[in-house]
Length: 451
Image (cartoon, rainbow, N blue to C red; front, side, top):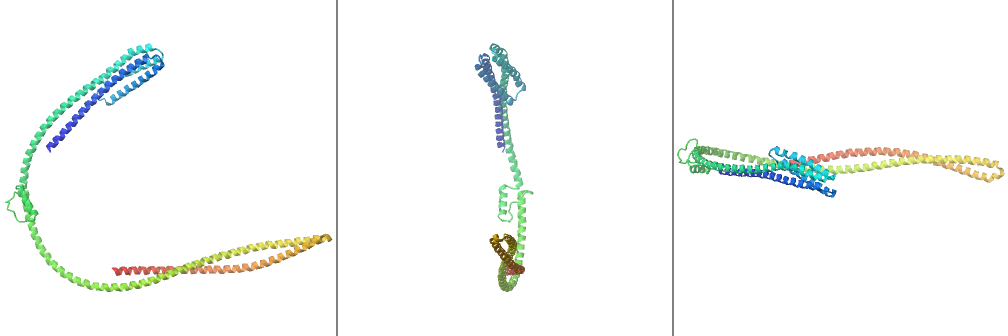
């Protein structure tokens, strides 16, 4: 266990050393980024010289675009340095003034070049531009030197810590191993005192107890409060319990014989009860057959009552249909009477017209003989129409009286049929209840017979 702990600690030290090396490499990476920033600054300075020497817009545009791209790259590089930099903030702050100064100089150089003042632009680039570039390069070089120095320092410290930790861990492991051996010897002596005898002797006694051997073992008197003393005491108590169980078993045997005799008596009584129940079951079976027969007849009667109810309902519907038809006939007769009234009115008007025609033919003397003959015929036709209308009206009145009498008779028949249907419905419901009651009785008797 101590060796495992030492190995785990050694593994942790290795991980710590690797982390220190990673930090050192990170410092070296920052130094590499600073060197790359210096190269970008020098490249941008050369590009600004090309901008200052551009004599045409065709030469100025690409040089200006390249200068802007390189300036943006420098900003990104410095932003990356700032995000991962863990050193003094003054080193990064020292870069910013030179960058701002150089940015202003670049803007002025571009404006002078665009205005055609290439000589002034070149002069400004050599003087102020070079000074700003030198300031930026100096501040970035300070970052580079700090990163390299920090990396070397971290690597040296990590190596020294690793060597010291490994030596300390080796010494601690040796001491722990020696202490573990001593503790093991002390623990074995304590275990032997706790067992009360040699472990082989204790194992022999426990195995004998486990196999059911409760005889005393000649091992001498064990030390008090030891495991062997507890085992010996347990064996003695188990022997006493087994002896008590044997006495109880004899008592149980005696009680079992008494229970057997009582069971024989109960068996005889159960046989008598079984014969009685058999007779009751046979009687219940006959009762169930009778109830089933009655239920069958009740079901047949219920079916017949249902058929009678359906027939009565159909008859009621037919009576209702006939009633409706008689109503239609009565309304048709009333309509015919109206038409006959119209015909009678036409006959009167025709008779008046014929009388007027006869008067006019009399005034016309000899010239109106033909007209008079026609008027006479028209008057005769009008007389016949009036007589026919009177006859039809008489027949219709007679028919209306008969239809009214038939309608009243059918209404009374319909009421009687409805009463018949209601009565049959009541009988049907009663038969259904009787049938259901019979079935329930049949099921109850069957369950009682089965139980």
